[in-house]
Amino acid sequence: MTVTVDQDRCCGAGQCVRNAPEVFDQREEDGIVLLLDPRPPAELRSAVEDAVVACPSGAVRIVED
Image (cartoon, rainbow, N blue to C red; front, side):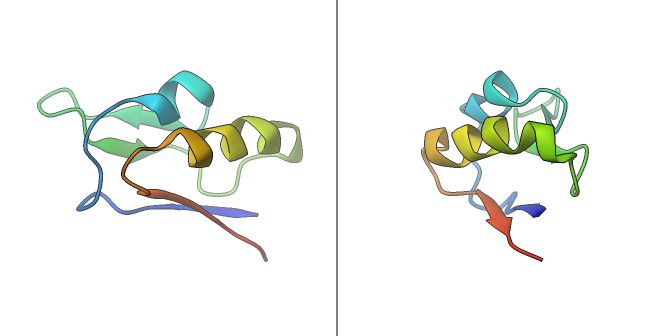
């Protein structure tokens, strides 16, 4: 699994960080998503999937390897 983010689509809601703080963070100045780990371990898959579903702008995606 590879995680991708589209910072141009991000609205700064922070749902990704709430669901998977090991994988996502937000920029201090505007709240836009930062990807901390594009290839998180398998045990975080459920949390990342929750982040994808919770993202109101569709900025977070999972790409299967």
